Every structure is written in C-alpha cells, then in structure tokens.
Image (tube, rainbow, N blue to C red; front, side, top):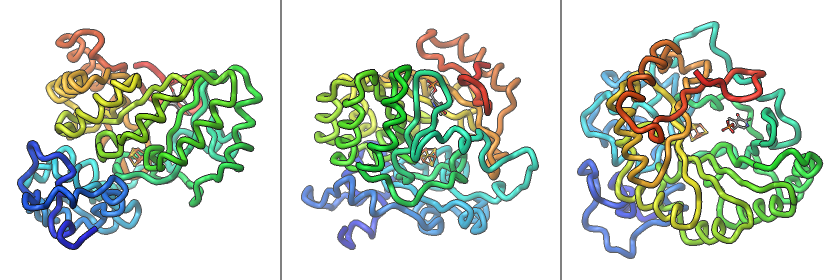
Length: 355
Ligand SMILES: *Cc1c(COP(=O)(O)O)cnc(C)c1O
Ligand code: SF4
C-alpha cells in the first residue's frame, strides 16, 4: 500500500456512498487496493482509530489493558461507517478495547461452551447431529469485543492439505454428517486457492451435501466477495449456505449490499446471525431496522444469540427475560420471516436452545 492510502482512513475501494467524511476523494482509480491489501492494512492502534473519529480516548472508555488481552483489528472500510464524534457509535463499540472488559465476574469463563471437549480431530468440532464445524483459520479481519472465541487456543498455523485430509477422515467415517460448517476465525480470510482445495476435499465425501460458511467478511470487507470466490461457490456440487454476521443496520453500505447480492446471484443461500448486545442493538427499533436492511440485501435473519458467558464481555449481557420481551416486540412489528430465532448456546446441549 502506498503512503498516500495510509494517510487517509478510507481506501476508495470501500465504496463511497455515506462515509464519514474521512475518505480520500483524490485517489486515481488505479490505486484501489485489493482485499488482500486492505486486510494487510487494518487499523490496529486504538489511538489512530479514535483520532480519525475525533473521539477522546477517556470519554470513549478505551483501556490499554483491554487491548493487551485481545488486540484491536478493524478494516478501514468498516471504520468508515462509524460516526465521527460519537463515543457510543454501535460499530465502534463492537471493536474498541473498553475498560468494562476488565471487570471480573466469576460466572464468566474462557471456554464457556466447552468447545475443547467437542474437538474430535485437529480443526473439527462435533457437537450436534448431522453437522460439524471446521476451524478453518484462526484469523479474522475484525476483532469483535464480544467474541466467544477470544480465549480459544487456536493453533497458530492453518492446517495443510494433508492435515485436513487426515482430519476429514472423521467426517468420511460418519455418514450421518451431511453438512460441514466453515468457521474460525473467519474462513473467508483464507484465499480462494486454499478454500478451493478444502472444498475439493469435502466434495470427495459422498454424504456431505451442504457447506455452510460463517463469516463477517461480506460486512467488514465486502471486496472479499470477488469473482474467484463466486466462481468457486457456483461450481461446487455442494449446496452453499452463507451466514453473515451483522449486528446493526449501520454496518450496511452500498458495497456490503452489493457483495450480498452477488452471493445471492451465485446461488448462495444467505442467512444472518446477530448477537444481542447491550447498548449496541438491544432495542426493538434497531433490531427491526437490521431485519429490514438484511432483507433489502437478500439476506434472511436466522439467529439472534444471547451473548455467551465469556470473560471480558459481561458489559454486553442482556438478560434472557429482557431478550424475550424484546423478541416479542419484534414479532409484533415484522413479518414472521424477518424475525430471527432467539437462541442461547448451552454447553452440552444437543442444539442451540430456543428462548
Ligand atoms: C452453532 C453450532 C453449529 C450450528 O448449529 P445450527 O443450529 O445448525 O446453526 C454446529 N456446530 C457447532 C459446534 C456449533 O457451535
Ligand atoms: S469475526 Fe467472528 S470469530 Fe472473529 S472476532 Fe468477530 S465474532 Fe470472533
């Protein structure tokens, strides 16, 4: 990336509709960074982020100790959708290391979902009948402060093709598994060649019918949805479901909508999963707007999760009773297909728990 791009927060590739005025308007078209370049040029310094947004660190609750426990990572195009001067911006609050993360609460855990026990082979979690979850990579384009995997001891290296082949023997040996979920980290942080290789291995297992991709990249790095990826998803014999993780309507701009539409046109079934987060989206107007915005992008709401009980995230908690009341309000104003299922994940359960 040239120093010119670094000087501004927003590479022009991020679209340009309703950005927060920090965009460089003078870049020639040839300077548009690829998604890989954008991924290599994340904002990782909270001071830089706050300066760009003209927000005072103390007023925003920024705490360097919280940064040390889980680093900041955010794409410039996602940061461009944050409101200048707003300490409570719902996108900023999802990424800024906050002093409230340091409050200790004995009921919070580092592995709240007992995922270590569900690890059946390197990179594979099997909890529910019929589907397994692959930790395809440990890296993400954004670090979400509420993330339940923030304490997950990811292997530093992604598995090689041979390692995957040996792990996938587990799936090949269990004919009840017809769906493979690519998760992480963010599986779309992987390049197309790696994904093609992994998909190829899955296609070799006759009883696998569906691949599901859980990713935040259509939202936080829409340029990731490139022609190579679309081709790959069109060509595979597997049915493709892609679950975008959006929490707020403000996360959508023209580039995000277009990325979702392109996926839809490629025959991908699009769903959304959100986390109900105190102070970010825990009111009926915000959730209603999110559902409407999702549908406008061709995405159906799937799950609304109660936050997991994970250390460092207690300040995002919404009680089950408050969540249920909110969900009832939402049902009262939206068509049924725009109301996500309110769920919680209980360790040891055979499915998500509907509330
Ligand atoms: C959430 C989850 C799934 C998927 O559950 P669905 O209800 O099918 O969306 C699968 N495996 C694991 C380990 C999970 O945590
Ligand atoms: S993108 Fe997903 S896995 Fe990565 S930090 Fe955010 S919630 Fe966690």
